[in-house]
Length: 96
Image (cartoon, rainbow, N blue to C red; front, side, top):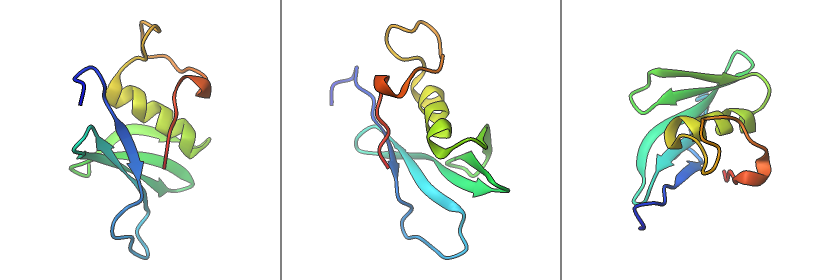
């Protein structure tokens, strides 16, 4: 992998279990290193780190809003923005 390219993947939890509020796992780079998860709690989407500690990122708006926050948290600002600011969906893709 090119060292200038970072990959952040949102994947289905494996194995999915009934009653578990984890809706996606988050993997960084290739081969993937587990760095956290997205869950549902009290009507909002939350981000927890790999050790289970809350990151402080959450969204009541949508899962994709939280995914944008997670991208900036793990990868920093997007090229050309200079700071970690939110941009439109056209600047990056989120796959789940």
